[in-house]
Image 1 (cartoon, rainbow, N blue to C red):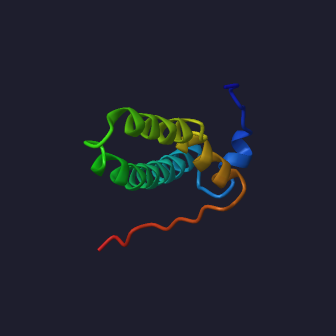
Image 2: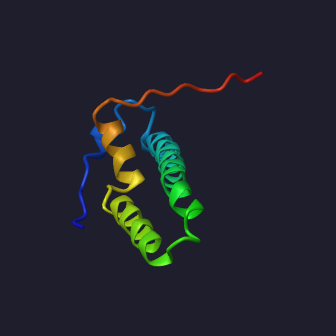
Image 3: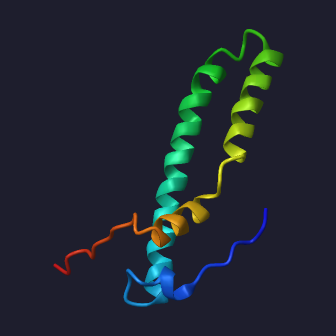
Length: 96
């Protein structure tokens, strides 16, 4: 996978500075990763439940699902893309 460069001024335009932009993107990447893990476990659950019947077929099903998830873009790249396209909104917690 090729490394994609980004313009830092464009990346930080919605944040106070580049460090805040990195924190925002990293938190979004974590959310995307958690959603992906949840989806993977939900899709693997029926396959694992039937695993005792025929292991070779089920192993192939698990492999196909896992390969599909590996082909997706990385959560970090998705978060950076969302940040660059102004699709991310954030707010500060109340200081109370």
